[in-house]
Length: 147
Image (cartoon, rainbow, N blue to C red; front, side, top):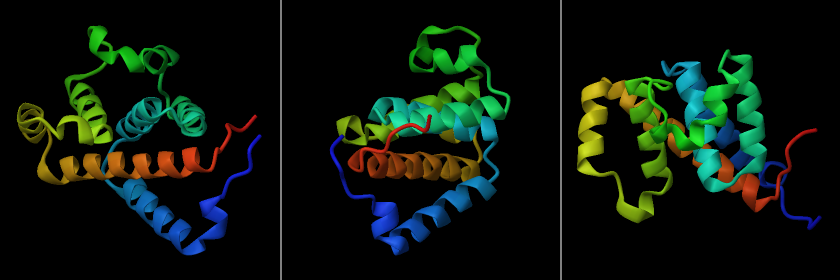
């Protein structure tokens, strides 16, 4: 396999900053379920096998079901498997991850702001930003899933 830079080893200052951001997310009021749904869905969109593997395992440890994980990339097609709040989070995860395509549509932002209080919404967006950063680090370095 092609050898690429491991930013986490090469730039300890950047690594410390990323772990600081991750620590903020972990200490936030976001539920573990919301955190893991964000991480898995963004990683699916970005094609980050390392993060899909890691966060799927983490979600299972936190009580997520195999069915919900397997169907996550088709969440819009599944009735009653994801809550209204989870559907809003997944829609936000997709639009923020693919933000260059259309930004965040006003109707989605309105629904999110009506569903979540302001701090929780800010934490959702920061969780999405954080996993997208981790995905880019892992993909750039060709990180591979653990065996």
